[in-house]
Amino acid sequence: MSLPTLLMPAVTERLLLLANHVLWAEPAAVERLRAHAGRRVQLAWQVEPGPWPSPPAPCLRVTAAGLFELVERDELEAGADLHLRIALAAPHRQLLQWLGGERPAVSVEGDAQLAADLAWLGQNLRWDLARDLAPLIGPGPAHELVRLGGEVAAGLRTLLQAAAGDRPSATPAASR
Image (tube, rainbow, N blue to C red; front, side):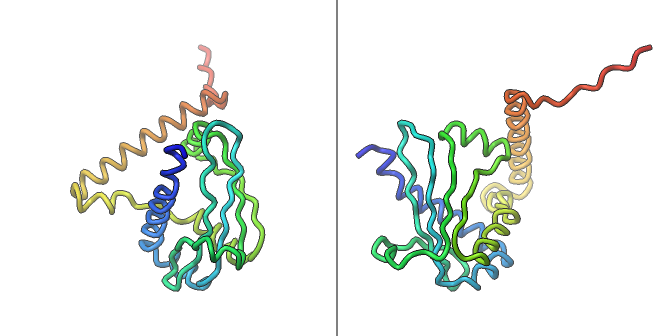
């Protein structure tokens, strides 16, 4: 078994912890999910073929607290209420697309209301990194670090757009 394959369960668990942390900080998001307590969401990845391992396809259950938990393999036979198939490019291209603000294509089958509420989360939920960093380094440095990170991300987006040929058009100088 390869190292990436061995690391995938730990990475999945950490990403789930991060998702729940972001959800917990937003009461409106938690309330939306509480209405779906007990429902299961099966994720599936459509990944470009290549030498990298496919990420695991977790099944998540919405808890009574309005968060997510991983469903154990023996519970998967009961089926999921919602199936999400997410198209992912090769890891290096996917990272560039995410930095460029592109979202992957998602195919949805199942519970329409759960799908609508998850779409709302995707459009409205944001991680307040400055709030999480403030207790560690202070509010001023935390906001400055987040601001600098935003500038770096904007610079990378501009670079990616230029590389893709989407250069902003320059206005010709007025002739005298």
